[in-house]
Image 1 (cartoon, rainbow, N blue to C red):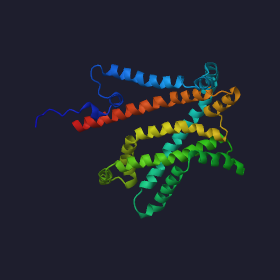
Image 2 (image 1 turned 180 degrees about the vertical axis):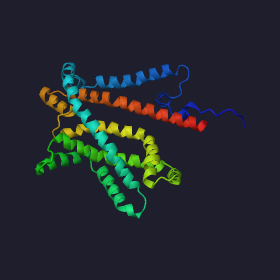
Image 3 (image 1 turned 90 degrees about the vertical axis):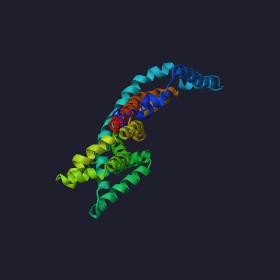
Image 4 (image 1 turned 90 degrees about the horizontal axis):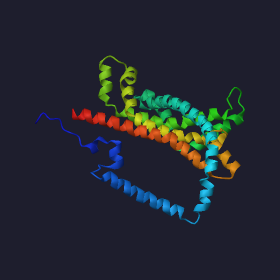
Length: 287
């Protein structure tokens, strides 16, 4: 064999550009641009020449209403960001506990594994909006002493409860992807099972599941709008108020664009980070 290291074809590196544009030949970018203009232009032409377009334009694309409601919607977005940040912290911690409980070996830990499995199955099966309704409207109605009645609090709790079930499975996939020899090596060095899990298995598992975790948190960003059902005045609830006041649906368009501005950068960061990890792995394999 020669001493030349094998080269990896660009398409196997999985860069975001290769998935989006393909392997462009000379002039390929121009062809992609022209074909995009033709396709999207045809779609736009069908929409603007349809009989109901004038009414839709007045109801959904009123520029004066759009720019008028935008400042209020951005102010209400602060509540969504607070929900997202606080819920993300709680989810990362609670989901990791659930995943570790489900991964504990031996018959003595069967009750913990059973609790984790039942919890994950139940809260992945029940729609988020129902959990938010049950907690946000049901718990305050009990009038229990020293129990919060703030809908923001119970919306936050509901998001943590529901999304922890999903994230726990992501963590578990990461834990199970670590070869058992890693734990065996930790035990041979004198570490206990708990120490091996903490210092050897979990750091590798968490690093591997960062991209899917980020995708889950994009979904969490959108689910913060569901707490409007229990009375939290966040961006979507503020949008409904503006729609009711103006008798026009343009605020819904403004709300959608705000969520696009919030989630698309996160999605692009996930793509960039995933491609970066893949390139590192391919470089390691090539060596």
